[in-house]
Length: 303
Image 1: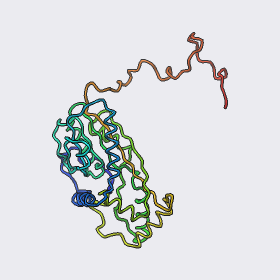
Image 2: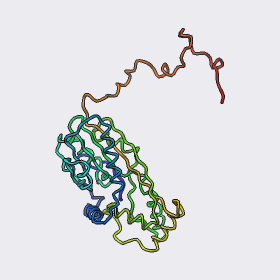
Image 3: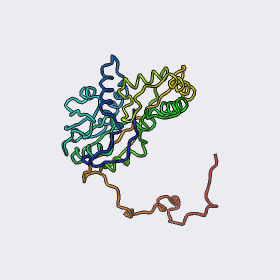
Image 4: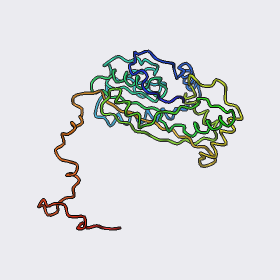
């Protein structure tokens, strides 16, 4: 996993792009390699798919034109037969106004321009169409990020980009609004996974297809000295029961709708019929409309 989600360098998908932050060839290679393993570690992809399908079950709508943006197409073909399955390569292969549901399935954290991809999803939706997006959030692999940085500075005196410092949930709801989506909601699911050691964790990331694909990554492998130092720091700072290590994964879910006149609308500022002071004033038990009693007359109860 690599790179922080950036601000909208190019909120218009057709605008010229700057230097790539993600090495798309390396990312595609990592995903293909994961799928060739006897037991790919897709448990987080499966968990996200379960959650999205559960949320769809709570929506009182039948969706007929569904598009899924994913790095693991076979998983979603089995889940949603008949849906359009497309790669997360930019630009997305979406036609304006063609879908009533777009699912962006746990790959937005790899986008060079995440706002641009959200805008493309928004444009693909018909009025009152739904976007459901999932991505790894800022709490993901915080432990690994910390110990690798400390170990590399201690052993080599330098620092290389190795783990993605991903977006925080407080910033992601604003991305939905900037993309032009109505009724935006951002929430998260925190998961903790335990590993034998730091190598076990890194092997699992490879089996997830989530290895380091930063364009600016160091091409040399981690040295034994650096790994030993990182393992020692990890074991001391982030222990789990049974002598194992804990690793956090934060999945953030974004929900937004293409605007439609029938959707609930916020009230116009200043249109309230009662003031907040009036609403919060204690009830008058006599029904006479008398003024609030002075503080000294209030009856209090202490526990």
